Length: 302
Ligand SMILES: Nc1nc2c(ncn2[C@@H]2O[C@H](COP(=O)(O)OP(=O)(O)OP(=O)(O)O)[C@@H](O)[C@H]2O)c(=O)[nH]1
Ligand SMILES: [Mg+2]
Ligand SMILES: [Zn+2]
Image (cartoon, rainbow, N blue to C red; front, side, top):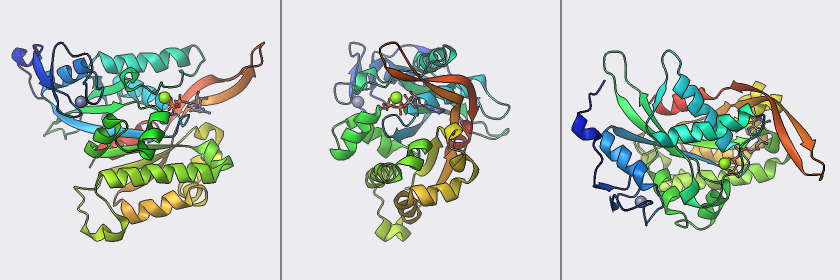
């Protein structure tokens, strides 16, 4: 374990934005250039651990917030060989936001499009071996799907998304399995747009793939979410990907040296209900997380 001196824990008066490196001071609440919360940057700067950025991308309603909230809860509870300690109160807030909702048999609300209201995963993860323990600060914001769509259409519109994606060693690309089964062309095309955005931000081009080095290429975990409602994705993962997301599958084969499909679900059973005014909502009747840790474990075990 790397020991941190008491001085390192002192609050810094001047520090860099963890995302875009702009100089910030204690008076900043958010980075004026990219909207990253300044006190998160301050905490990360104070800790002095190696930073490891992971990006989570996917359409609106693909299940990003539910997935990342459950991922955090499982990391914080920890398994024998894989666990994470909260790196700052931001992580605990995200975990609380999702787990409180699920405990009340509700899904958390949609993530707002304004970057200053996004929650962040900030977790201290030990990625080393028993002999050579290495602590990493894992950082992954919960972007809104609508912001991701706007950024892909107009790169640079959300500078935080662009910077974090280009710094990320691993990408979680979330696809709604139920939507992919029923409306596969739309899901396939949106996922393909995300994949091309990742490639562009990492300087990758399927035409000259041989020139890529493994160092340049981010690992891409394509995670089918909501597989509790789509047994085809859960049981025949690669076959499901080939038949429902053929464009994405082909593009990934030609572009990313390391990509893999995963199946995940948080809810064990979901029912749709209508209230007295006719508004429909979905209720997670019980929570049975499956396949949540595997994509992250694969991403960070390079
Ligand atoms: N069946 C099932 N449905 C789920 C699961 N996770 C999420 N959902 C459904 O998907 C909806 C959207 O989940 P979110 O996590 O809010 O989606 P998001 O990708 O964060 O959406 P934005 O915030 O708009 O980007 C939820 O309200 C649920 O209806 C799951 O594990 N199983
Ligand atoms: Mg969300
Ligand atoms: Zn910044």
